[in-house]
Length: 202
Length: 124
Image (cartoon, rainbow over all chains, first blue to last red; front, top):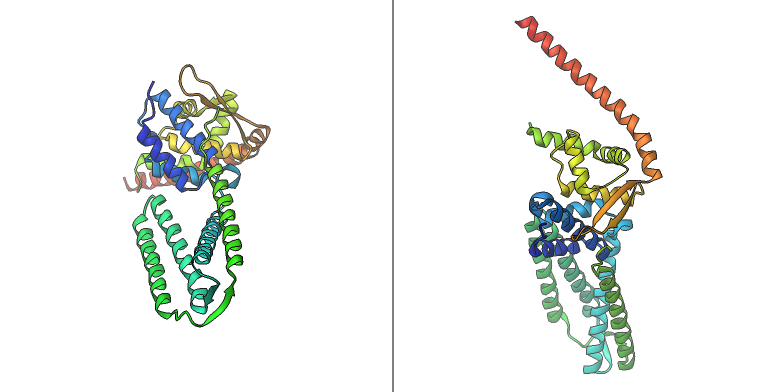
């Protein structure tokens, strides 16, 4: 009886995870491959293809009912968590350093812009990692988006005179908002971790 | 033009759902590797495990198959599949449609082959 080699199993698990497949479904797929290889003695690469190819094939047959969220809801959820960390962390750090928090037009415009560039770069890089073909093009675009984020930070730093405030947030309010946003981010992350936990079929 | 294996794989893709439903109607229940062997014995080789397993799971999600893990003898378990009532209905609905479609396609190809043979004989 053959045993599925750990390297293939690990690579397949990562490849399935990159497709946002639920932990329960990942466990099922790994158990199916393990069972097939144990019975046939076949090389998993010959029977199922490379982990990346097989994960793409599994993902193509799945939908929200069977362990794969819609791309839009997944991206919005990830973007919301990222925004909560960015806003909550930023406000809390600023509140602990100075009082009150003063926001200028430059910060209000460039903050969400930087956030958007960073998130787009991360999503594009992930798409590049899971793409069976054409992954390099995605990675080049992701690098371009990351460069845009850095350029925006640089420009914002140059334009920000720090003396034309638009909104002033009292220190206590900044701490409350910052803690609430970080707590919401932790809840969102905990839900993602729970959903992603690999569960083997019994 | 694609080689024989590629062509067969393309043809099979169009009828694999139905073939799996039909095989399970014959056997009552089965699991991935046994179904691969049955497909091969039925003259439909070249099917990869990597194509069949996701398809079985999709049919199960669509409610056409029932899936159940059972413990193996000392090794990993096997996932057995069987037709549901909905699966039986899908086979009863789509089976005759497929047979009619395939019969028409066979007739078209056969007419073309026959006329090609006739024109070859005329030239000879």
